[in-house]
Length: 391
Image (cartoon, rainbow, N blue to C red; front, side):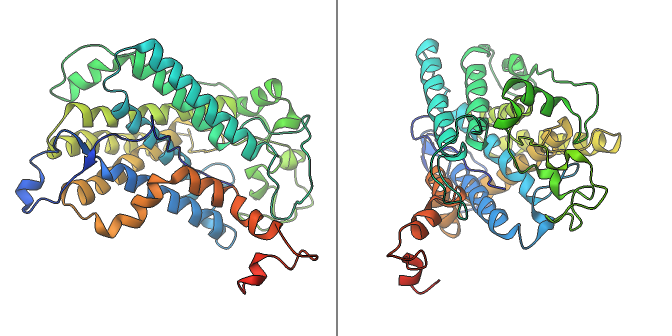
């Protein structure tokens, strides 16, 4: 369950402005944010998401209920990836607010997305070995093409192109005019008719046809479902009547599901537009809370009528519930940090957020544990862990 990072590319995904000062009185807190201030809450929100990623990665094996849902439904771990995508969208709106040369901006976005995709390929394609799989070499016929960073690269690129090319010059002074200005970015059509079960769905079918079954994730999340594990929702031996698809490869960051993942990034982009066009804190909070509540209401309504929340398929209801939760949490962090100035208690989260990619690569992708355990003297047990007295 190696999850989710977030891209902290210094040029492009960083929200650009200086730290806000704590307002001395409550009424002053809602006066507005000065031009040229850094949105600290975005770094804090990113850091909280990194901390959540580390927590669910390490505690998921001990507490299966917080691990990724085996299929339909959502668990705590299922919110990490959408939160990162949401953050990418918010940061994009801030860093692309003054684009003058669209061709240059597009070229930079393509290059940055390509760099991120290549990093993801190196990390998750089989080049770095797991803690218990110290074999060497990469089988190009079986390497995994998609992954967490690759999905974020795709979502980032599509959202960046939308932000650069698909917006009008309309003035913004209320919620309706905001939607009108960026209406071209909101026309997303995504619908698939047919089965949505693990055995047969369009997401898996397209990945098998385009990438080939040998290039997909070999430990599908549905192997922890009741049909596939006697210890469900934890991993375990399959029951005697387990269907054959229980061990079939399935990529949780597949191609078609990454299209819907881009929608989460686009929703974050609209939240970022609020920062650009509304300077008073109270107006920003209203413009964020209303759509967040609407997204949550829509998500539960869709789930009630049969369009279940499902992360592997990245269904519409899953998109809505995770984006709505991200919007509400981001608003809460914004009020706490940027409005009321409680930055000091969040310094650790802020630091994590500003170094999110490095933390993800070292911890989320097992590079640090592999380095610590991979160098030893004569016997594998004589590694750095033994030196510091942990092994």
